[in-house]
Length: 226
Image (tube, rainbow, N blue to C red; front, side, top):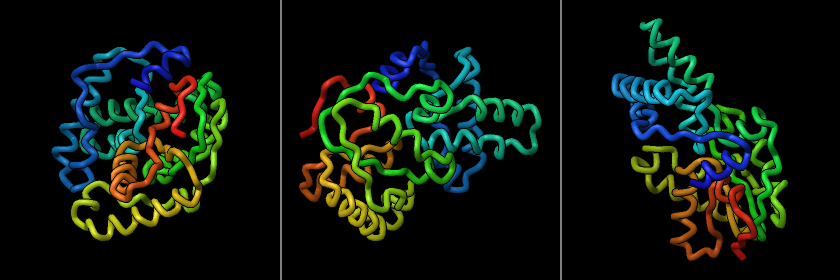
């Protein structure tokens, strides 16, 4: 809902296709290419039905997966062309706002100290780094504090957190220690899986620091976490 609000503030007409399904990343990462291909086909057909020009995702990992769609159709030229068109039309939220629309100041206001976590898929697969920082720096009342090792993994890694929970928690504890060192009221990211992992661990540690998605900050008007 926050993403819709932000896109509308940026002057976009937002359409949500109710038949949209998962992008197929869990199956793809687990080696189940046939299942991932089925998800991709349903995803592409849903977008085509919508009649929209672009697809905007508030999740870097989902956007990165859509950019992998053409690999699933190497033996099918017709579907590959549709997958390439889908990938070309898909943008992660911060990239769409800054690089496509040229929008940095969305009139948001948020009182408090904030730090940014670079999610692995967004940073390493999509090259997202400066865009979210530019957007946060334009928020009135917000103090952006750089996170030490901001590009280090949060420990989630999809099924990695399930298969290797002890290692996952150890990685997350290191991330949480870095967050605590900033004195931030809120840690912000552009990937929901990272926010779930970090937020869950901070909660179990009794930390006062909360997690928020970038869209929630950009949609805010005068809110505070302090």
